[in-house]
Image (cartoon, rainbow, N blue to C red; front, side, top):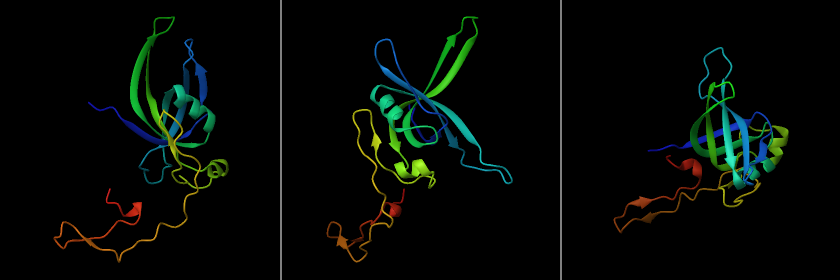
Length: 168
C-alpha cells in the first residue's frame, strides 16, 4: 500500500515549534495549497492543509520558514482521533512531513517576487542538504551537434541538454 504526499504551498502563519516531555521537537503549521482549476469568473480556491514535522525536520522548518513563505514538502497522511473532556470525539487529518525543500530564494521570499522562484535545495531529516543558490537566468546551452551510436547499431543518440527537454 502507498501513502505518499507531495505539496507546494504557503505558510498561513508562522510555524510553532514545541518540545514533548521526552525532549523531542515537533512543529505544527498550516499551508495553503492552490487548487489546479479555476471556474470561469471565480477566484482560484485553496485548500488549507495541517502539517506536523518531528525532530530535526521540525527545527529546520521553524528556523527557516515563516508566514507567507513557499515550501515544498513530502510526507504521508495520518488521521487520529481523541475524546475531549465532555466525551465528544474529534477527528484530525494531517500530513506528517518527512522532507522539505525551499521553493523560492530568500530574496524572493522577502519581496514576494515570482510565483515559485526556483528550487534551492532541501532537507531530508538527516542534515541540511542544499542552500540558497542563484537560479541561472538562461538554460544550459544544448550541444545538438553531438551524436553517438548505441551498441554499434548506428542509432544516433542526442544528449538531453536541460531538464526542460525531459519527457516526464
